Image (tube, rainbow over the protein chains, first blue to last red):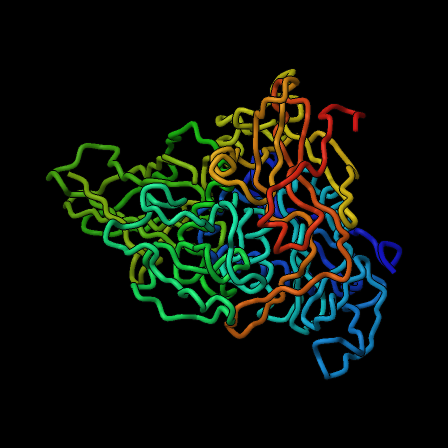
Length: 379
Length: 187
């Protein structure tokens, strides 16, 4: 089973913020979708894009991203579900569908671990999009599962896409896990990942500039002799938004610190912590569109009768543009202040903005106005 | 005096609405003015050695099995590489990273990699419980790095550990895992 069990059908740019050479390019591959199911993949990919857009700091850096959907068809639908799996007494279905990336549950004897041919996924992504920066694979199976590595795998279970975002944190933004499970105490040097540190000195710890002078350091410790148990959630001694040094990270329960009480690199459903947001932004920001404006022009011209309000609406403005509006009468108007306007803005989609410019003529004479825009920045 | 203020919401009942159409300014005009034509390198200080139209990065794919790491593919790509992580690596001593070096061995660029050799899998759950790790059945896989094609950059070095399980690999002093010449056809 493998690449012979399907085909790369097409590549579609589903988020387009400009040239691929300059943007941060995410590739979404399909696994276990038969040709007739690729429409479902389109919806699944769109749902992941929406989730990513709703996850800060991707939201505020959205204009840095291009996203590609690569339709890969498989002979059969789904993923392998081995009958026996070491960590699960319930038998799997035993299904072994023939799929392109040969994804299977029960990787490493763990039912929820779902992964496939990583090398083939990397090669498929870079062949489809040479500028690819990160790759995720949606596996067409409703059972919760996923895994990380060089690419992120996750199933179509509604909550599995959280795995995809967390694993992107590792593979694309070099973030460490912010919990301990495999080691009791971190006893060696400072890790190079941006979101964990062994340094507790206020002046030199990795994110020292984000720590308030009044925040105790370390901020939360497990305490000597308490490093062998599970890294369960201890209550925070400070408000949740506090940046400090919280013990536990990089798979070690003690001796290493994260920046906040919780983070998406600790609990999948939590937001990224401030330090992780900063690290992600550092990677994305160079991909934001360059801007050489401002660009000015007249979008509309028209009459407004005495004592009336007219609202012009203009649509399909890229959400990445910062546009300012000015309404200017094209003939002299008295009294001063006789024409006023207000701009209302409506985000009609992830990528588009509609402006409503309501012009009120408070004078006793008819006027003609120009609706002028200035695009002052691209974000 | 004319006045302006912004507020949310669409048009209102009872107002006369007029269609002002789509933007008269096209995104392509903005991109062209910003020098972002499709296919341009769009680099930040990493343009190719022979000019801005040259590919600006190297994509190198590594395959690993056990402690053996080999180059599986290498090609130049017209795209931006991740930002330099020299500061992180200078402050740290444990983990994995890649270096672009010049002919004299001077490091020109550094990029942190998060555990590129996977010997454990992270097991997630959907109930707000911390994940955990389990050992992989076999240490076998692939990873890619994208580094800038810098003037004078002739060699890519991957540092980390492939001879220990993931927990220890993160704690042990890194070693050189692979070295690649950054030129077409060389390995």
